[in-house]
Picture 1 (spheres, rainbow, N blue to C red):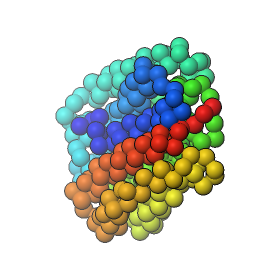
Picture 2 (picture 1 turned 90 degrees about the horizontal axis):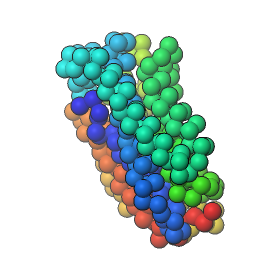
Picture 3 (picture 1 turned 90 degrees about the vertical axis):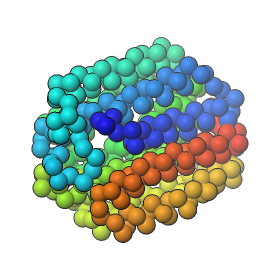
Picture 4 (picture 1 turned 135 degrees about the horizontal axis):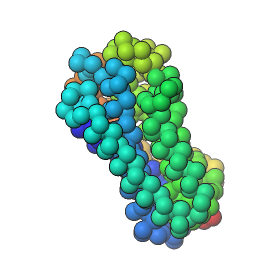
Length: 290
């Protein structure tokens, strides 16, 4: 429950896209891919555990919360055990990172450290940025730009412009997952003093933001083709437009917890399906030659 499996597509999807950029050009190191994938998953789970612990300490997870029960605030697991699990999970992420540093270079030390620090400081530390409306920005950066470019780098040890452009739609969809979470929790977050972007914008404008993030992802996907790199195979992502439309309708019209919980899960599945098709289109296009 504390790992929040519904959010894990945000960790898996960028690794698939970043690796496909190298694979399409004929470069693929299986162990580096596995280490990057597991490292991303462990960072995501560690972040979720850390948030469960920190939100409970700050009183953000109350009984009237519409989302799934949090294990710390709900008294299901002692806080000390949640904290220990957080340390253990981030430790596994460090182990994966150590292998990647060995095969791809010390540049990844800073990336890994920054990713873990961002996960902890989302709701932890003296000034958690998740309480100041910056969560979506950091999700876009770390589950979009950093994760896609980093997954490509561990394969090729280079950073072409296509890696950053292809990271944009991935980051936008990852941010959309957080937007659904925050629009669901808007009332309880406001009472707890958690000034998420949804609290700052209000429910109506946050719903508009969700639609803009989805639209931006589909428009950004074929940009490498429009800029003269890759091919129209990138338009494969548009096959999931009907799924996006259905989830958008729920987010725009429903405010009850069960409906938004389903929308959260479906946004995660949307991102995963989108990125699987994006990866296939990138490979069909020949990927990126560094």
